[in-house]
Image 1 (cartoon, rainbow, N blue to C red):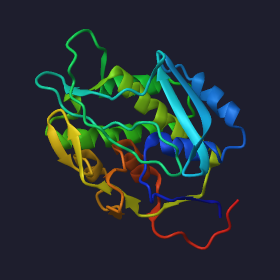
Image 2 (cartoon, helix red, strand yellow; image 1 turned 30 degrees about the vertical axis):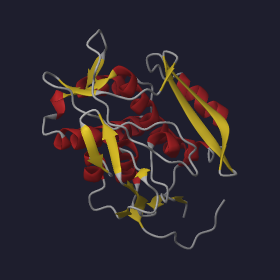
Image 3 (cartoon, rainbow, N blue to C red; image 1 turned 120 degrees about the vertical axis):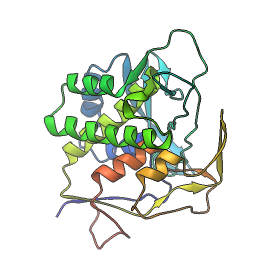
Image 4 (cartoon, helix red, strand yellow; image 1 turned 90 degrees about the vertical axis):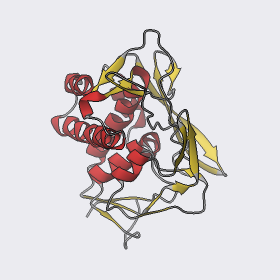
Length: 255
């Protein structure tokens, strides 16, 4: 049986999962070319070798109109700004994820996308049907968690253009990579979430952030010794959607 095992001792984030899966693919260049030909507006994706603590891995770069993964703002359709968790780029193997909660502070013309816009965008991409369905399901999990955390409807959640496209790229990339790898089962270790607090425009929030905590319900997780926020909402949603079971690594032969 072909099993994919995800070690989440340093948490999980969309870009980190994408970097890890990229290293397992038989043709990295072809995969990146396919991602860059999807037609995500203004999006370009690149990968480069990276080293952290002496361990080599892959760093994923997502640029939107030349801008790399700036913090994503989520605002309600009307009313005051809502904070939103967003993952920054990190090496996939020994990375520290930091979800920063940012309020929408710019009143000039920014494009925001609601869930209907995200759905329409995903439907327009030239993806295999199952990949599209997986990406839509993961994004729905994130939106549902954010809306519950902020006590508003999914329709009231709007994503800043850069952050929304960044998340779509990460989520779509992970879904596409998994379709190529085609594991029969996906297993993962209990998830490290970090500990302490995260500072945001509205004050100080505990780790894990509210949306992450909601997405990790009934999934084994622990704080660990690392201070900071290790698991992002995107990472938690991808784990929730794809992982069949959370446990210690079973007896297996690595390839």
